[in-house]
Image 1: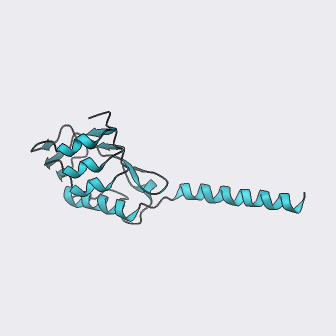
Image 2: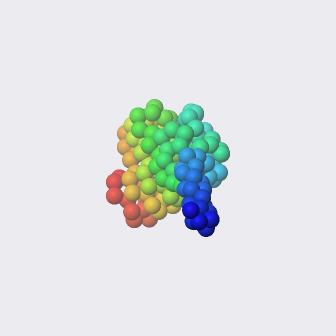
Image 3: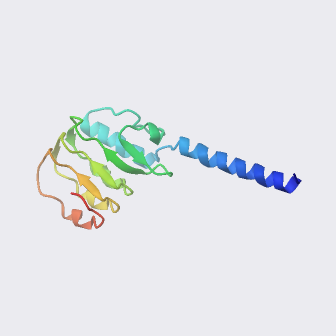
Amino acid sequence: MERGAAFQIGALLLLTCLAVSRVHCVPLANSQAQVLLDCQKAWNTTIEGWKVGGDCRKASNVTCDAQGMITEISLNYNSLSGSLPASIGKLWKLRILELNTNNLTGSIPATIGNLQYLNSLDLSYNSFTGTIPDSISKLTNLGFL
């Protein structure tokens, strides 16, 4: 085998290994992890893997993209109580937010309107009070409410 071809194969293998290893450990972006910590505090609970610098794959009930941005939170039937923190609006890449059948209270924060990619929002069977914020009209990708 020519030396140039061997180098190209080696470089290809190295790039493949780097790509695969990146998939195995995706750290939560710090801003995203902080929102999860805010949620834990508001709900007076601890959820496995929800920490700053944690591996997104190990964060229970959360899905992230390759950049560590949260795209899904699914915490149905978890007996969560407390309010939905305003910082939830910082999860701008969130596509799915499922918090149904818990004991969440208070009002839905206006920052929910910042979730521009949200296509599924399920807050049913909770005890939210107040009006639905006008900002929810900004959720133009919403297909399920």
